[in-house]
Amino acid sequence: MCCRSMSYLLDALSSSWQQFQLICVIFCAGLAVESLLPAEGGQPLKHVGFNILYTVIFLLLTNLLAPSLMALIRPWIEQWGVAIPVEFPDGFAGQLGQVLVFLLIMDFFYYWFHRAQHLVPALWAQHKLHHSETSLNITTSSRHHWLEEPFRVFAMWLPIGLLFQQRPMTIAWLWSFFLLWGYVIHLNVRLPLGPLTPVLCGPQLHRIHHSRLPEHADRNFAAFFPIFDLLFGTYCRPDRNTYPATGLHDGEDLNGVFRSSLSPFRDWLAMLGRHRDKSHHDPRKH
Ligand SMILES: [Zn+2]
Ligand SMILES: [Zn+2]
Image 1 (spheres, protein in one colour):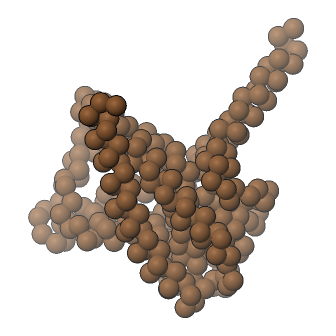
Image 2 (cartoon, rainbow, N blue to C red; image 1 turned 135 degrees about the horizontal axis):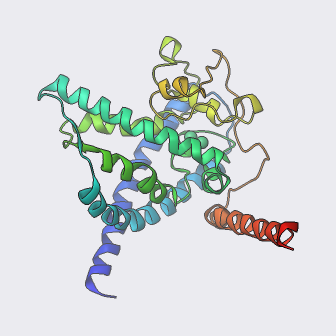
Image 3 (cartoon, rainbow, N blue to C red; image 1 turned 45 degrees about the vertical axis):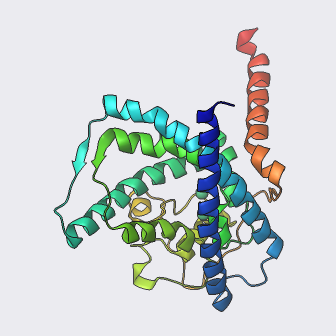
């Protein structure tokens, strides 16, 4: 193996290890909060264990694939990007505004990518691992198939990069706070946000997104701002005491390392087979 590949591999391993340690701290804090006011009691520990194990696979493969893909799209952005400036004045208020605008842009693209993951069968095959969680909790936030980040490179970071020019963020703690929000919305806590419910995504609103009930299907796609669900007709405001059971509507169990990692490929092959059968039996072709 040449030196460059070795150093790329070592970088991926080192980043994964650092991120895993940080995520473990976040998980411990989240599980402690969940024990105080759980939305759903008696969740099986083996599901938490599986999510933590899958986090390792997710981080390793993400850190192996995402940097190469980001390097692949960078020249496209430099060559074809229109670089609409997102610039605010210096100072706290300006930087706060810049972070908020960036998050709105990001959430807009996430909303549409996430909605497509639910509506396009080929994308659902990759996303359904996240929804196969029957005991939603903080560790579910890392229960994404390892192709999630590679898909986001093209569905989110490429269009955002082509359209907007970003100034480097200088309020690191604020940025980190918003990154942490992805963990907060998966918390297994009974915490209605009251009048803030349509303003900011919280654990209850996101639990509706994971609900097994047919009336909650394909609702609340945004990660930060429910305004996008309100604007595009997918918003569902829960009653104060609504904390539905979560999981896939067909009850498919994906709690297994190989099962979860290979599940999209199995589904894609089945789709291809059905497509071939259909075109084979198409009377117009005879
Ligand atoms: Zn989803
Ligand atoms: Zn989720």
